[in-house]
Image 1: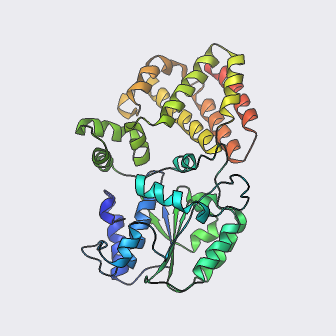
Image 2: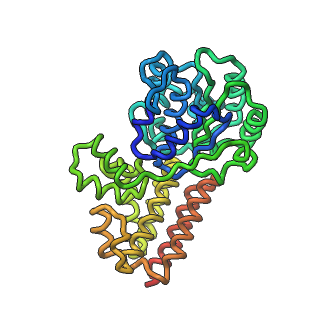
Image 3: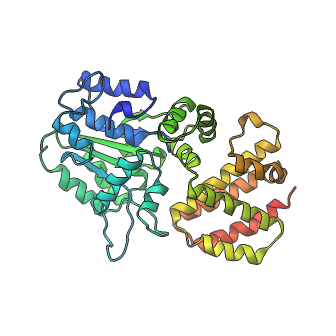
Length: 375
């Protein structure tokens, strides 16, 4: 992965380049930013750059032995930690259990979300976590000397999903790091990482992509016009993963839209029996997909409220969403928008806390039936 592979973020990339030039490479970094901001790609590009034997023009050379191994993510001094799921009889999965799938999704997609990662594992409704046993693997790997690179690099994707015991063990390692080791924590939600870990890292804030950057990325990967690309980029609001999903007609987005429409229409007609059956079906989804669905619902509630206020210049919807919302938006107004958003946020929170999905959906259904009539 090269810095040049990631459009935009010129200031961040220059700052990282300067760190190596001025011999200021820290033992631990926190790359923090919203989903779809390219943080993981930047982390890998930085790891490749600091281990490149002949960097040139502020980027890796791509020709040395280190770069060639990094290009396939098989460098012996590059290690990954990421959320995994328990499948089958394996009750103690670690990142290396899924390292082939991990390399595949990075090399094929470059930009992806936690939901896409879990879907690629065909993990059903299981929730992805970084389990306690992962800390033992970290200690084992970092106890070894560097094989051929200048630095051993440990990239931890989504440390906010790390079990508390594993977090505490990681903290001890960060307090007394092995020599020539660089940790790069890549977080969507740094506020959910224990504060003592954050205090041991150098903060690198990764901004969202600009609309121009996203338009450039999606035109590179898809046969669409510049005008179409600009429109999709605006809808994505700085999230390149969302932009690619919109362009490629993501099955998840279609699924979320259709189920949002079903929920709202049947709540309006008070089709309780149909909604109960629907809630049972939704409760069988993976927890990551359930959370993504609630996030999607929150977005559409917001967009419909703004549309109802006639603020079209700050509306961000696909043509399909806009067609539905043209008639639906009057149902989202000052009398119910705040409570509806709160109920969706609460449902999301309860899923995170491993509450009963069936009960969570049932409770939400009853609340939406009451609120949708509050016109």
